[in-house]
Image (cartoon, rainbow, N blue to C red; front, side):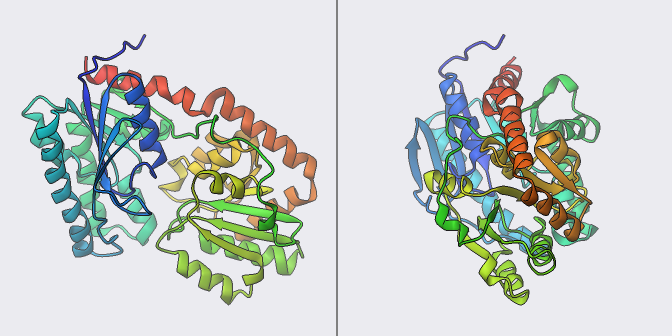
Length: 399
């Protein structure tokens, strides 16, 4: 049984790739820890409207620094992005330390570099919790289509991270196996803490019907629009649905990312402008109004070394809102969705389109899969099932 911690336990969470509270996993972790009796501070970048250098939200102290330019290629680009972030981590950590000494650092990757801060404060008795969001070596390979020097360096940094961490939290069992086998961590020091929506916030409803643009079926995508998310495959699937199968469909694309403009051009090149709406980032009720309007949720992430073992937040969100899912056949995709999804042949946009058409043709199957998905979340995959694991991981950290 997890004991309630002493109120003076102070956790410093460090995240580089998203501002908080926009990073929903980190925010759920921070607020859960605060409710359990810990004091929580967060260091993160600014961005997406979260631009105050310091604020307190729900009793969580948030320290933000100017967002660095995202690296796209090359050693020097990564050195510039991460060098800026590391400087800010050390500067803001000292500011937090001078105000309220912290007992643990939780490092959220990517990148696998927060261990540098952990080593510095380890001499002062601070413990290190590694929150394993992404498999960085596989992420680099998926993003840039090669290995080489940076990929090798990432394997080294990953190994050091696991060696420095007292306890590690994995987003799924595939990541847990990496921590144990590749990271050489003791199994009792690795906890699976799945990312999942809060069911009291993600509630099925009618949604905003204006997003349909007169189409019979609205297909939705929510998440990062990046090079590794398979957006080119989604456009090819849309072309087959519209031009070959004659489907009356509209695609609602919710999110932001470095490949957004490329996708917009790709849609135009395929003469599909009338079948796509790009909303940009949506939050809160606006996001729910959009997602509740869709009939089918899609996850076109291609099968590769990273995606095969990654849990896709968008799949969890579709399921929570009773939306049937179409995705490529990925190991963790099946582990998450089970019977709530149809699975296309890996990286085959035509088969992806055919799976969507199967759901278009059978409303009863859509309803059945939607019910299966929400039940699956309620019974085993919601954040309520992750909270005990998070608190158990911290109880282990302070043993």
